[in-house]
Amino acid sequence: MIHIGPQDFVFILTGSGVSAESGIPTFRGAGGLWRNYRIEEVASPHAWARDPRLVWDFYSMRRSVAASAKPNRAHLALADLEGRLADRLFLCTQNVDNLHEQAGSRHVVHMHGELFKSRCDSCQRPPFADDSGYEAPVQIPRCECGGRIRPHMCWFGEVPYDLDRIFAELNRCTVFAAVGTSGVVEPAASFVAHVRGRARTYSVGPEKPANALSFDECIQGTAVEVLPNLFSVAI
Ligand code: NAD
Image 1 (cartoon, rainbow, N blue to C red):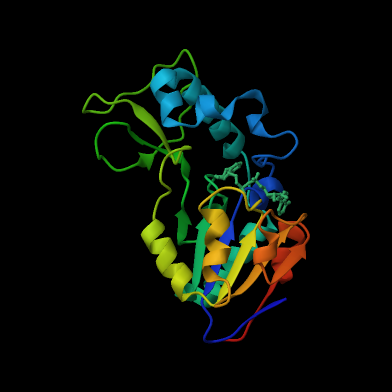
Image 2 (cartoon, rainbow, N blue to C red):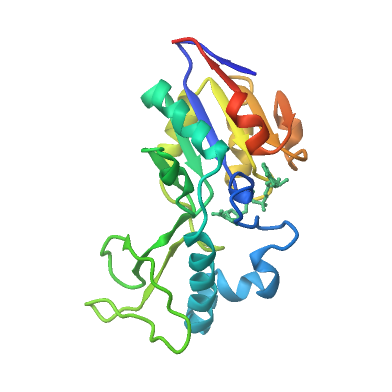
C-alpha cells in the first residue's frame, strides 16, 4: 500500500497495461493490434508522407476497437484518487484512449496524443474532437487551409506533448507510480530516474518493467487487481 500524507504530491504515469483489462491490446503483448502492421509504416511522419491512406486505415481500426471499450476498476480507482487529492494528483498517460476521462478523471495529460482527436498536418489550427473512421474508400479529409487532416498522435520521431508541464510536476512530486508500462518507450521510461532519491517510486504490473532497478518497489499484479486498494490517503 502507498501511504499519501497531507504534504504529498502524487505523479501517476499510466501505460497501455492499464487499458488491457478493458480489452484494448497493449503495444507489445500477445494479440496486439500492431501485429498486422509494421509500426514504421503507420506511426511516423515518414509513413504519413508516403502513405496517408494506410495510416488512416490503422488509426480508424484503433478508433473502432477503442470506441466500444469501457473503463475498468483501475481507471475508476485513479478517478477516485483525483477526487480526494484534487491538484495534488497529476495523471500523465501514454495512452491515447479516453478511458481515464470516461472513468471520471478530469485532468489527464495525454503525452502521446488522443485517438479521438485529429488535427491539420499543415496549419496551427488546434486539435479537434473526431471519432470518424477514414478507412478506404473514404477520402482523407482536408483542412480549410488545404492541409490534410491527420490523427492527433505523437508518432515515432515526434516530440511528446506537454513536456514542460510534465517535468514541472515531476520536479514537485513526492510519490511517483508507473502503472502498466513496460519502461521501454522514452522519455516516459526515464521519468522514474528523474525523481529517484527525491520521491518514493513504485511500479505496478504483472511483470517487472525494463527499468525495474530504478524503482523503490515493483508491485506485481494487474492494474485491476492492484489499483483499487493501492492508496491510503490521510488528508
Ligand atoms: P507496452 O505495450 O510497451 O507495455 C505494456 C505494459 O503493461 C507491460 O509492461 C505489461 O507487462 C503491462 N501489462 C499488461 N497487462 C497489464 C495489466 N492487466 N495491468 C497492468 N499492466 C499490464 O506499453 P507502454 O509502456 O504503454 O508503451 C507503448 C506505447 O503504446 C505507448 O506510447 C502508448 O501510447 C501506446 N499504446 C497505447 C494504447 C492505449 O491507448 N490503450 C494501447 C497500445 C499502445
